[in-house]
Length: 173
Length: 216
Image 1 (cartoon, chains in turn red, brown):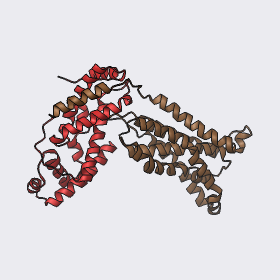
Image 2 (cartoon, one colour):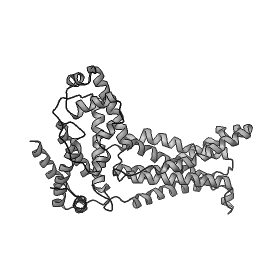
Image 3 (tube, helix red, strand yellow):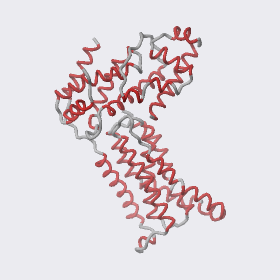
Image 4 (tube, chains in turn orange, green):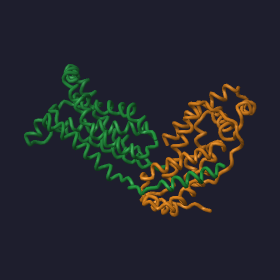
């Protein structure tokens, strides 16, 4: 099913008026859109949690969508905020988990604008490689260390510094 | 299992839905204008207007120029802060920076004037002659600061740190314009330093004190 901007905007306008059926449909569509949006940005095992956090944030901030403006850039701004928040938490907790490979996602205009690939271009090659291997492709620290030739501690440091810089870059976009 | 939990969440959120009144920049702008007027009116009602204005004359050229430069910075910062409450990827919130660059004309002019009259500059910089204006400006900016903080607290600023800065700059500028209507000094160094100081002080306060409260 394609999720198009005019339909989402109509559902959102109805939701702001208190239409629960429209809101349920909107949340379902947003769930699919967000899952695609996060698929290229975070490890697969974190997607559901982040989608749920974003839906809750969206619910709390319903009044901040202006019906005279497109819906998806608004949703993307909230998703990006939650994503940055998660990057910060990961940096703070130095939580370096193991997981499986990320799935591909469809491109669209909003995705392309803040694509992780473009953002990784601002990092050093060591940082970008460490984050790509561990946080996006789901390799363990040990596996990443073997693949990129960095020591395990250097991989951790590069992920920590890279995530910090990424959060700053995304926020300043 | 995960699908089931997301479905349950969606059901819960839909059940919890209540009609909301969309936030409008215009409504927020009216609150900011009210805060600006209230801050200035309180200062002028308590301490009075500058001599030329209270005599029904036009403000002297230099303080008038400073007043409008600072007012433009305040308006641009307030507009940016209001827009930050309604997020969207791709939106530009940087308009206030150009007004900030233009307002740098004040301290730069003061520096060059100071080079030409060092003794006069030192006199103008004495805290006992100017600190009061800064304090008045800080207090007079409270109305705009409170209005913007309340707006952004109810909004969804996606960069709380930047929002804190911009609230502070708007509030400081509003306070400085109020002081400009009260203080009778026509001295550029006094205006740039003691009136203008409210802007960076409020900016730092916004960044340090308000930004953490704007996270959501």
